[in-house]
Length: 265
Image (cartoon, rainbow, N blue to C red; front, side, top):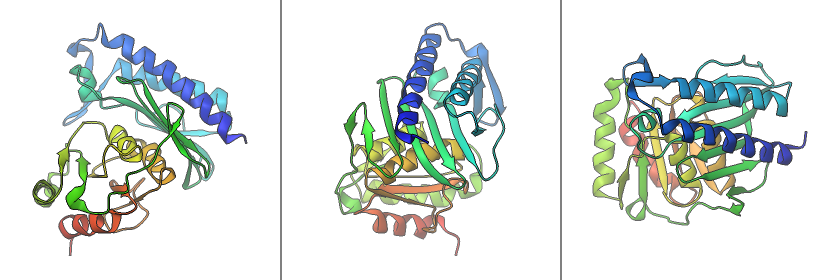
C-alpha cells in the first residue's frame, strides 16, 4: 500500500468536495436544514458531500470500510476504515460563518495511519501519512515549543448535550481565562486540532465528540510533534468522546488542569 500517494489522492478528493460545499453556500437557505437532535444539524450538503467522499475513497482504496457521520458505507471490523466528517462545523456553515472543514482519517484496525483536514473557507489542506511529517498546503508544520499554560492560547468547543458536565467544564474554562493567553471557540473541532498541529493554538480540549471529529486532527498533531490523550491521560480519545491535545512541552501541565476539573474523583 503506497500510503503517501493515497494521501495525495485524498487531498485532491477533499479539495474537490470542498469546492462543492463552497459553491452550495452561495444559494444555501436555512429551510434546507434538518435536525438530528438538540443543536445537532444536517443538510443536503453534508449528505451529498459524504456520498462524494465515500465513492471517491472506494476508488482509492476498494477494500476499506467506512465510519462516517451520516452513515454512508459500512465499517470493516479489524481492517482498514475511513473515518469521515463531510462537514465539520455544520452550524457555522448554515449561518455563513467560518470555519468549516472536511475531516478524513484512515485507520488500520485501531491505529490511524493517515489524516486530512481541509478547511474550506481558507483553502487550507492539512495532511499527514504513515510515520512521517505533517503538512499544510505543501509546507511542513510543527506544534509550538511553548512550555507553560500561562503562555498558551487554548481552544475548546461547547457541548450541545451531556449537560451534566457543564459545571466542571465551565470551571475549567474560568481557570484558562485567568491563567493563559486566552480561549477561543471556533465551532469546528477538526479545524481546532489542525490549528494545534500548525502552531496557531497551543492546546485544545473538548468532550462529547465523535471519532469522525477527531481522528484526522489528532493524528496531525502527533505527526507534528504534539501529544493527544483522553482526560485521564489514556489513549481512548478517538472513540471515548473526550480529547486533550497540545504541543509536547505543555502537555503534562495542560492535562493536569483538565483532569483536575473534568475527571470524577
